[in-house]
Image (cartoon, rainbow, N blue to C red; front, side):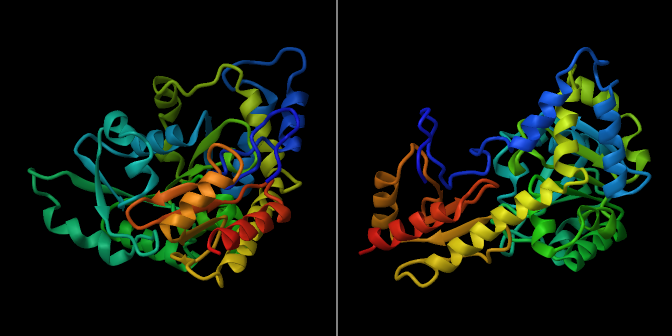
Length: 354
């Protein structure tokens, strides 16, 4: 967790958004920064982005770059719902607690929240609102939204996702996958990206790039082109149409192109989380509260240990306290997390409890 000599914060474990962009992504942006190119997506890099989306998610898939993950989630929801509709998600989902009410304000939908099991939605929970279907006094469930990987670092199996999609479709609903960390989930399961979308019969996904080595930009991907028919207008109204889109699209070429940088970055982050979990699991007073499937480690620690770590580790936010009431911390590993960073944190946890 050493600091950069130029004055940057030390590498820590607060968020995979704290890491910089991967050098190959920056190189791709630099290559795109040559002469003039068409604006608003009328450029060769965005045409390549379109090809990559079809390569990963099937010949009918349509992708739309946006600036960030909140926009990807909210606009995806807005595209497939009506004002009277509702979205089923788990309590604590990103769309529930980390987007400042944007789904409710901009998409105008109600969120129906189910109790999670290690961050996951289970099929039985989706039936809780069926008795109100057709009742004019109640919002109508239209969309199921799940995060892969989840907010607590767990990963749905392919079979679990397919069961949720089947259940949703059987009740006349669609399924959205919040894939801010889809790369980490696919790397964890050892499957192609498309397996966690078209392979489980999801309808629309938010494809993350920023948390996995990108500079800025995520994407909305429709597996059914009919669902995204008017999305270009919705993206413009939602203030997410980049005029110099080539610089967003070029990052997807670097990450999701032939070199599979997305997988290399995700595998590295996941491996560091596994190393961290193994290193602290046997420390007295440390309890891992969720399975460590991807790049996040959630652990319960004695409060004095948390306070000592926050005070002694370098950086303003070396990690976050995820649950203040239950003394649960979140340690996130990034594409650039090193083994020595992990080992230093493990040693600090041991020393703090001594």
